[in-house]
Amino acid sequence: MTNVVENIGLEALMDRANIIFTNGYVFDGTADINQLKKSFKAVFDYVNKFKFQLKYTSQSDFVWLNTDSTTTLFNHQLSDNIEADFKNLSSQSIDLIGNAPMIVTMIENKYKSEFIIAVSSNHKYMDARSANYFFNNFINHYNSVLQDEPALSKGILSKIKSLQTISGDNFITQALSQRTEINNSQNIEDLLEYKIEDIGEYGIDRSELTKCLAHFKTSIRAPQISQLDINQCIAHCRIIYPQITKNSIVCAMLAKSIYLVNVEQRSKPAKHKISFKMLSDLLNDENRQQYTGNYISFLPVTIDGEKSLSEIALQIHNRIVEFKKNGIDISMFSLTEQAIKQELVGTSDEALSFVVTNWNNYDFLDSNRFLHDCISKKHLSAVNIAPKDNLGAALVNRPVAVINFSPNSELCLSFFPSLKCPQENKDLLTKFKTLLHAKN
Image (tube, rainbow, N blue to C red; front, side, top):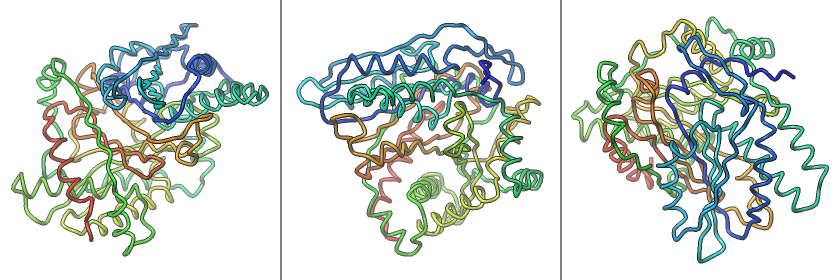
């Protein structure tokens, strides 16, 4: 194992976008606060990457420098309303985290045995699934200490210590060598030719970014978080197409929401296409235990907005199957790394109406006793951003939705703060709610 943090081009972009994402895990019961703090520090101190800071010169010229020190931030607060304080935490997360990779805040209800463990992460260090992996091992360490299993807690630290960040180039070489069926050059050609449209003009033009960013820096950024029961909608869609996933259905609801705003509020024609980007996690289970970082790609998806919700969900499902089967997501990562080396990111506008990312923590979903002697209730999510320049702003210049499910199958839907028009996110949420009981 090397102690060097190698370069992933996407992490230079994340440094400029300055995204702090917060996962909130809600529990019933009582936790040992002192041991939570000790376990967090123990696991945190074993992550090699957390001893480094990214020095940025340009998107193709940056380096991770070893500082030989870490800042462990663990806070505890009593609360009258833990979910309201979770929102407040996210709105303050930029200032709270500073230059640290991560901060944990335990928000405890004053009046009953209920609390949130909120984990705020700096996106330049890792993607959401890497943050989930860290959180799961932090909780496993806590559980093993309370259950007097020293061998298990020691093994967890050993596993965390072995995590590396290999370069984007090395990851691509490894992925392509392991999956010889991937035709990388053909995939890249297909991606470059893939038709995308933003008829509703949601993307902010590059010429507007300076003005938007200046205004955004003076605005109050309150997160938009909704908890929704979409089970009826899922059931109706699956009557016709039982193979489609929850993720595809939620993405279809977002695309249909864009379509409805376009037609009903922006006077667009009844028949038109909607294009968006969907995040794809590139690490398999084995890789997840080896690497930490931003090993993700954003895949373009185009659907027919006028189709029924179930038909749109099927279009999205088939697109996901296609890019997973053919390794198109790996090729998209390769294409992005090439563009960053050539300093092309942010130099042209993309015809995309929104971006969507899925933060599901499947270990948390699989057990209602995830935390020792407590009951798992919800998984909340929220994001704050403070782009450092126009390049960073270009990465978040349209609606960005975050979706994840809780153990009770409730959907948490949140949006990145809007650089230009907060009402846009509110309009999309309003239309999304009209689809909760859709029967087509």
